[in-house]
Amino acid sequence: MYQIDFAHPSSIYFVGIGGISMSGLAEILADAGFRVAGSDRAKSDLTEHLAGKGIRVLYGQRAENITADIDCVVFTSAIREDNPEYIATMEQGIPHLTRAQLLGQLMKNYRNSIAISGTHGKTTTTSMISEILLEAGTDPTLSIGGIYKPIGGNIRVGGSDYFVTEACEYTNSFLSSFPTIGIILNIEEDHLDFFKDLADIRRSFRQFAQLLPADGCLIINADIPDLKEITEGLSCRVITYSITDTAADYYASDITHDTLGHPSFTAHSSLIGVNPIRALALHVPGDHNVGNALAALALADYLSIDPAVTGQALLSFPGTDRRFEFKGRIGDITIIDDYAHHPTEITATLKAAANYPHKTLWCVFQPHTYSRTKAFLDDFAKALCLADKVVLADIYAARETDRLGISSETLLAKIRAAGGEGYYFPTFDEIENFLLENCTKGDLLITMGAGDVHKIGENLLGL
Image (cartoon, rainbow, N blue to C red):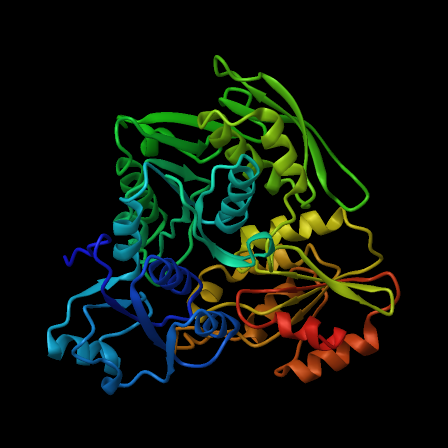
């Protein structure tokens, strides 16, 4: 594998530079003095941001973009072998890395490399941890899988030995990382276009845990079934947390909610030398965020951060873009946007919405990928029935071309069979017109999905 010499900046070219993680890595290298360029299919806020920092961004992926003066090409997992820039790189014999391999090499430069993994909650928990480390004055370098407004984007380049990043399991990319501290939030079925089954996914998370050095630490959710399969025999320290399991090293009790669904709770710890009982409050909704906060709290204690600083950071944490994000109001109808695209995430978001002021709860859902929709069809229907009314958009194909005989109309039939009230429209214009005609004063409208469904709420608000 090609090794980047960070002491001698070179020329790095990113294929797919507009991706949330790729753009962050490109920015980190550019800040370190590397000559950075890259390509993407179309302009976006992220590519425009990179261009504003002097990074050359090419639109359209063509063989002629790969020139002899490039020292290394970095590919995302979405780039296939028939991509013209991939072919040109191989034909010219230019050294190349995957995004995950580059991230792993970068992590080796930091004494405290913190990697947050899990099927759900990575971006929120990474952002919570970022807020704590910033509040504590640690000057961390941050790579977040979403836009975090306090740092003005998804990346922050710091000057200390703290590096915080998400660690995604898709295509086993997190197995290329070199964390000294790892967090596993949950392990569930997902990305079944790559993994064979849940057992296959669990094997990968076990391998991720085994990456941690003997003097490192794994913080893991004690509610993961058969936890010992993941943790048994690890050489590193293991710290557990749970919302309800009082046998965990950290657990929560006395969870209450304010008028906007924001939880307050009592955090307990059995670890020697750690404040055993603390009253904490969040300004993001949902009990699932209590779990995320416990993981962040355990990390902060492990790093010996002042508990008062941790508590204040959790209280002031504003959430990240597209995670129960308040978008605005129109005609006294509240519009929220959320990234949830897995049944567990949908359930968590809609349960959080139940504690938010509303008359009728509307969910406009855009399924993400045919393979995921087919794999969890019944689970999607059950989760979406937590909303009073569901409006479905067409499936967002992302990287997929095979429809697998699945459509949003298939999911609609399942929702109605389960007793839910559902509707389907093939265009955003039709959905927007339907909502304008049917939503009334006091309703809560959530646009939901990992594609571009957020545009519906933004269009209604004139954003």
